[in-house]
Image 1 (cartoon, rainbow, N blue to C red):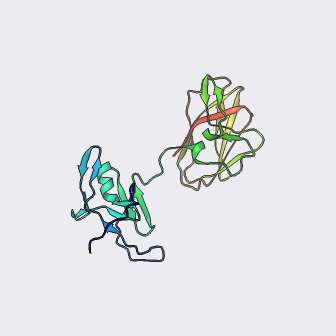
Image 2: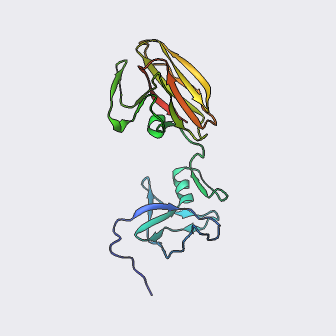
Image 3: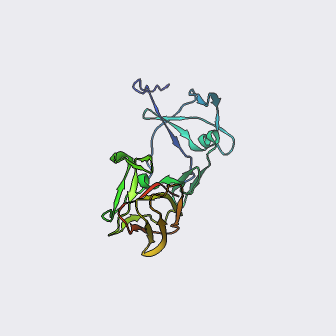
Length: 219
């Protein structure tokens, strides 16, 4: 008997699936889906066919008004590396390592009583040496700001500005990682780098309350 999809499935959301040679476990649920041979895939203006690892043509799957595409084929189209770690039950798309990210927008302090960290959504803009900055860190001089890095990162880079001569101190798991002197009213053109490879607990403090950290990147 010929089967038809529901007319309510007018605008499907395109997701991606990954074929893996594993047996069902408690985290897997059997479903009933449809192989959609009538659907064309157009990438960057060109019609594309999809193939598996044995060079056999594969097709999109339609399930619950959603179209699922084989992720390896998507990787081939886009040039992204795709791999699956069966032991870790993890699918990797692109570089396996953690790439560079905006530190302030990515990691929030679990104890911020030792200073101030503002994100873009906080809306606390300030002018630093003629540059408008919409997210920044003011470490503070009385206590440390603490972060949980989980040992996942390698380095943190940032620029800094101070209204008086001062210094910023960085700690990793209780040990001093580095001290950086900041000259009063010096244009913030220099980029500082802190090695945080393997660090779990990261902390920042300063010897003056009006030192700013911005353009802060973690990778």
